[in-house]
Image (cartoon, rainbow, N blue to C red):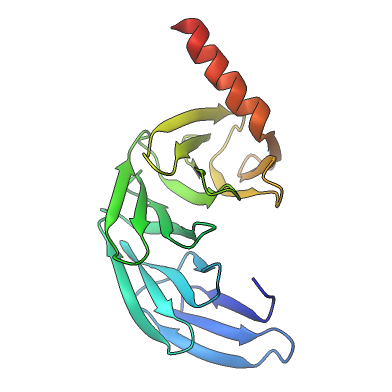
Length: 201
């Protein structure tokens, strides 16, 4: 977050941490599988990475594992810290999105509202909502505290491989194999979904 370091990973079963300016390799973290996703904690003290059907939290300075998040029944494809660093979200090939307590490693909730792979997860900047994109071409919006589904956004015609947020939290972005990137207005989309639900009820 301070721009001083970069984390990279891939098929070689390592996570590498680099110094941005000098391009020097600072540390290599060994893992047992290919890694699909890495993320620094907001204070840059921890690094999360996927590893097979779980995820690990590393102490960046010591290069040691401090927490192992286990519970998925398939390969974990994405891992993200919440803006306050107190939670970690994961999703994967078991079609579930899961929320974890960073300090204890306890699973807080899991949701399975699709039968397809979930490829990417992200938090809104205020930390109140989590978003996941997957193979069913939809984006799911979750309440971070309860895991309740707040909305399902439709618009892509292919698998959604990436979701992200604008810094001001007013827009979400999604990238798909349908060769489009879509920008979503958070407030309009959420409010419209709530209105439709109330109207139908």
